[in-house]
Length: 115
Length: 114
Image (cartoon, rainbow over all chains, first blue to last red; front, side):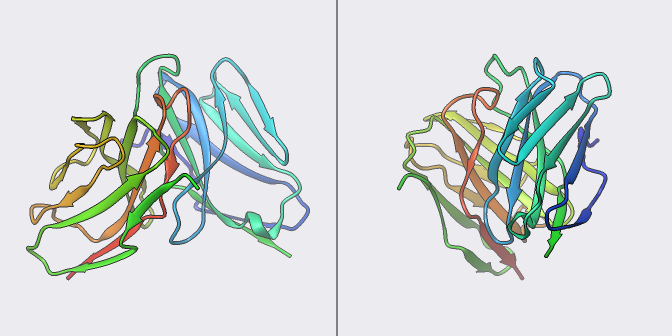
């Protein structure tokens, strides 16, 4: 039972264009969402997060959008750069204001940015 | 520099042997975690610890054991009872519950059991 789904295993875009990575979730109790970036043989690094009280959060070239009614979030990267080529993981947790320590990850999307 | 150190980077063991993966952090974080990554499977939670001398099972704890005797250290033992131990193991930490702060990850240990 996969609670966080990234249905596109891979995505290829041209340098300078927009990259849009999508994530769907099934657990309506999730209220805190994160995106991580991972290079091969390294640990994931945190990119950006959003809580359920917001529908958008922006940090430089990265913007995350949350649609709670659709249980869908997306990560936009504008403009895309070759160094953005990596696996991107969507993750979610319940009860952002409480004592929950568990994070549930999707399977990841491999982004390739072509020069 | 503060961070999470996992050692060794690559580990090879024969089937039937227990093996312990090291994880040390100098971030002064209370919570520590172990995740496993398999191809096409994403990251799955094995164990986590909110505080010294306390830990809880994650989603795939069978065949694994942990200890948390010091705040800085959270070693993971892969026992012979783990049916598919070959994987990439990631240790992480956080200062607060995940809703309040993201996890910081180490660079992982790739375990191969033959």
